[in-house]
Length: 118
Image: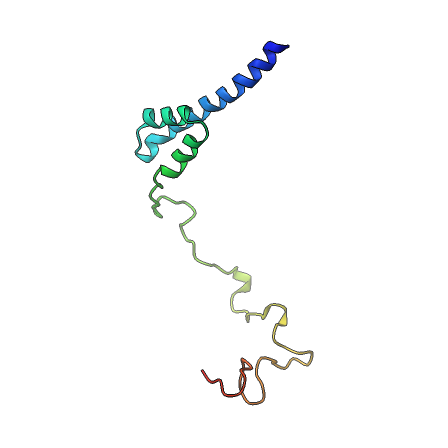
C-alpha cells in the first residue's frame, strides 16, 4: 500500500512534467524555437517553465489566403430576405402609438440641458 501511494505521489507529477516537456519539444519548432532547450526548461522548472514557454513562443503569422473560413467572410442576406425593410429591434424609441420618442418638440434628440449645444 505504501509503495502504491509513493508511486502516485512521485509518478503522477513526474508524468505531468514529462508530458509538458514533450509538448514543448514537439511544439517549439512550429514557432521557430529550439526544442531541446525549451523541453529542458519546462522539465527542470516545474509549471513555471511551461507557462514561460507558452508566453515566450511567438504567435504564428496569420495568412487570410490559407484560412478556409476567411473566404467570403462578408455579411450575406438570404435570398428570401433581400429587399426587406430593416426592423428596429424591439421597437426601441417608440411609444404605444408608434410615435418616435427620441426627439422633443424643440428638435433636441439628446435631451440636453438648456445652454448646452454641441
